[in-house]
Image 1: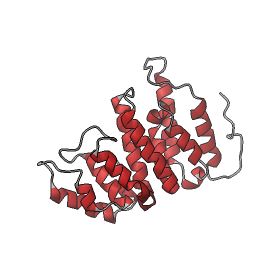
Image 2 (image 1 turned 180 degrees about the vertical axis):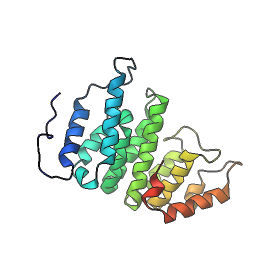
Image 3 (image 1 turned 90 degrees about the vertical axis):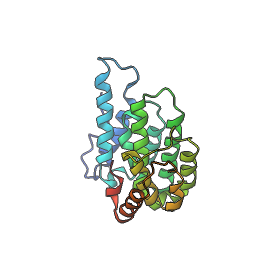
Image 4 (image 1 turned 180 degrees about the horizontal axis):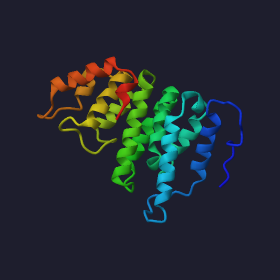
Length: 211
């Protein structure tokens, strides 16, 4: 399949590459729910395109918000190319709103494979973590979704890597620690560990968003 934009040779900081990748994602027949040997390569093609978009420099994606939102609304490709969706965090409140909707839709999609649901969940959190204080407007609905199980199915009973990412993300977004504590009411809850995570997240920059 011929890909437009790549024929351009101007020095545009990778913007033409970003356009080409999104064009290919839109036109790729990649129904990865039909898992079979003759379709397996499609999964890896789409996944690698998502990884490439995630790694592009910020100037390359400066005009890519509509394409990222379109990808986030694709019920199949948003799971396979989920790493690309972390870059919604570069687009302030509008990107944060799209990430919140991604997390909410992911919970409601009962047909998606469990592993892909996890990948979308992690991508949504990393994107909000990248957004930081510019995602402040979605703190309340995000906390409400966690507390009401509208975003994930089970409240945490002990700390794991996913829960650490949740705490780091909320702290970087500007959520008060006492509101985050409401998520952790189990007897196995470790307050000292929670305090250490909060302290690290407050001091770190983008490193806090790693999974």
